[in-house]
Each structure stands twice: as structure tokens, then as C-alpha cells.
Image 1 (spheres, rainbow, N blue to C red):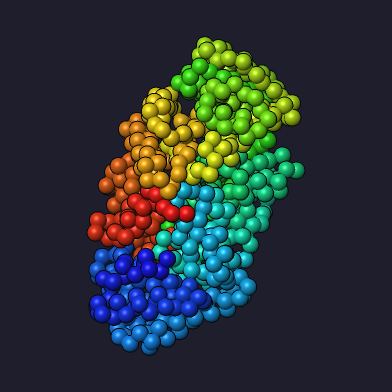
Image 2: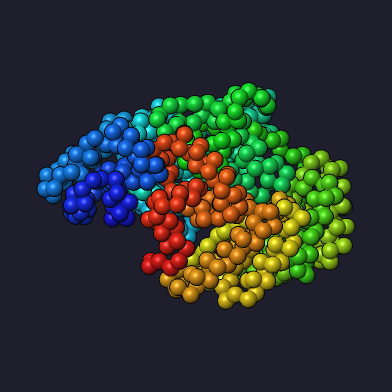
Length: 562
């Protein structure tokens, strides 16, 4: 891991001979000091983000000791100095958090260097477990002191390499910050810590008559959901995370704590700082507390399931339903390949055809009216076997296929890797985008089941491939690229809810243009001038800078040994 960092730091020191000696010494570092050495090496890696004058200023401010070490030609003396600095940082972290909440074991680092994605894991050098806002600030201040990268970690369920420590550094886990701070029932909002999952939050709310509607996937934590601006199956009715966050408390890269807003349902006061951080994937600040909007649990809920002769017919049904004015709760489409996977992974015996799942909610009268309107639209688009259920157990049975889709896909190709990718297009383009994608897949030798949050134009492919087979890896990459380019051409986005991470950086400029990327880079440099917070995510590197990181992104899209 540390050997990857070394090429990035060579240009930051004056003596080539010293750099070669520095590299040689690090390779011989003992276990505990090896982790610490990576932290200090990662400090210099942050310089690639800046122009040369910024690098010089950062050296003068942060790296006097490290500069001295780099100039030492004697390997043993250099190693002693390096180990001393590494031990100092580890020791200060242990003093700030207690020794039992600072972990450098490979097993714990391994758990925190990966997510659910196909991307190659990159382990942090140390994992810390703060229990309070103050402790987060202390960790950030220490990392700022030594110019060490920080990667926030919630549930580890992200899908684009968000938690990968591409430059090493400190992983800040929120496992011990998972509490509900305060429920404001009359105001219909709740304040929580970032480590709580949405399921845990809804369990705490079950006796209030309220709920939090975002449901991106099992195990997702609220902090990570803020970072990726997630959504899920309820977004068609309740919006995405952006619409459901009232305010945040955020620790900035220098350790300063800021509150982005108060609890008023609307405000025209100053810049919209809340939404600056929602979707920023931990690159601008570390969220320490979140206040969320809550919704009233509907009086009645019903579920319907219908099959169609094609995915185009199913998608067209959703488009017409949205135009009809029906306020559906959820609209989920599974293609025939995903239905086959679901059948093999359960005792369900569903017809292997494109299948549309609707959820209706509201009063008794509203639900009955919604079902009647949608049934007519379904019939007009050749839908077959329209089934609906109001009873809780029957609703759960009908919705089972959608709930287990994520875990079912790999059964079609045992021991395969799964490249889960998503795009989102304007709802009017959904049927065409899905059809063109299916045409692409029909010509491919890889399987890729599809699931769509059809009500808001978002769909996912689960590309099944062998990452050790170059032909399959190249084909998976081609399918993903074609999908993304198709969505952007249709005025859509390269990611509807997964976020950019490391996996979608290459497409961001094509989607938004160079002006938007330049502005993002300006914001990043203003807030995080030393590139400490989750480096290597979202923003494409400037030309000529951090080429090694670009190589890593390219490598992750190709085969890798297991």
C-alpha cells in the first residue's frame, strides 16, 4: 500500500538520492511502524492537489520535520526519525481517544478499506472510533497537524469506492456514534448522530406515528446517506436526501465545528451551506450531527404487481402514471433476468418477465382511487396479471422479490464479481434508455440483471463478471461506459444515487462541463486547502497532477488478482 504512495511524493522533495533512500527504508519498516510510516508518507501525497506555491507554503507550515527526514541520506538514521514521528502521531491519537479506540491491526483496517463495490480495496493506516463531536475535532486537528488524510466511514455499504483510502491515512469510523439525539414530534423532525442506520432510526420512531422515508439499502448509515445524497425506493414520493436534511453540524479540515442552519422548515439566510455538504462524500467536511425531516406514516398502504411483454411497456406505464397525477409511494421495475435470479434465490415462482411493483399510500379513498387509475394505465400498456394487496402479510409477500433483488443477482453466475452501477434520466427518456441498454446487453456475453426506481428515472445494472478474466473485465467496463454515456446524452446523470466516489470521476466533466468542475475544484481548495478529507473522490484530477491516482481508477475498472 505504501509503495503506491512513494511515486506521488518524489517531486515534493529536492534530493532524488534521499527519495530513493526514503523508499528503501519504508519497505523495511516493522509492522506497527509500517502503518505509521504510511500515515507520514500520505502527508506529502496531499501536495499533488496544489499549485507549486501552495505546496511550498504547506511544506513550511506542516512539514518541517518531514522535510528534514527526506534530506537525510543515511537509511538507519532516516528510519529512526520517521518512526519517531509515526509513533508520535499514533500516541497523540491514543491520548485523544483512548488506546482501545485506535486500531492498527490488519483485520480492522481491512474491514474499513472497502465497501460493497467492485473497486479494489485500499486500506487506511489506522482506524479510530470517536464517541463525541469533540473527539472528532481532536482527530481532525491531529491529522491537520501532520497533514494526514481522513476517510469517514459509516456502514460501508457504498458502491463507488467512497471509503477506500487511496492515499492511506486515518479512517474515522462512526460505529460508536449511533444515537438519536432528539425527536421533535410536533415539528416532525429528528436529530441523530451519523452512525445510526435508517432502520435503527425508524425503529426508534415507531411509536410516534412518524418515519424517515429514505431507504438506500440494508445497513446504510445516515452519515453516509448524507455524503452520497442517497434516495431509494421512496424517493418518487418523498424526494432524495437533499430534500430531507434540515441542517448539519460539520467539522471542517482545520477542526472548526460549524452548524449549517437552524430547524426552521425554510430559510433565506445566507449561503445554503447544508446542501453544500449533502452529496460531498466527505470531501469538504465530516458530518457529526444531522437534523432530518420526518413524514407521517400513511393511513393505508397497498401493493400491486404486474408483468409486461417488454421493459419498454413497463417503463411507459410508469411514465403515464406519473403524468396522470397519481401520487404513488413506490414504483419499482425488475427485468426478466432479475426475476429469474429472484426465483432461483427463493421459493417464489414468478413469471420471468419484466415486472412492475407499485406501492400506493394515503387514506382509504385515495388508495382505492390510485389503484383504479393505475390499473387502467397498466391494461392500456398490455400489462398482465394485475395483483394488489392491502393486508400486511400479503403486501410483504408481493414485495419480497424487490426486497431480495440485491442479494439474488449473483446466483445467476456463482462466484462472480458484481459491478453495480446506476444512472438516472428524465422520466420521459426512461423507456428509451432502458430499451437501448437492454439491446446492448442482448449482444453481450455477460449477464446484467436490472432494477429500476422507475418513478424517478433511475435504474441499476448488476453486471456479473470474473474480475480475473481480462475479456470479461473489459466487457463489464464497456457496458458501464456505454450506459453512462447513453444517460448523459439523454440529459441524465452518471449516477442517480450511488455517488461519484472513485468510480464515476472520469465521467463528471463530460456530464457537467469544465466550468462546473473548475468551480468544484475551487470550492474544495478553499474549504480543504491541503486535500485532507477523503482525497481522490468526486473531483477529477487536474491535468498533470496525481497521475498515479488516475492509474488506480483505470486499474480498478480492469481485472485484478484475488
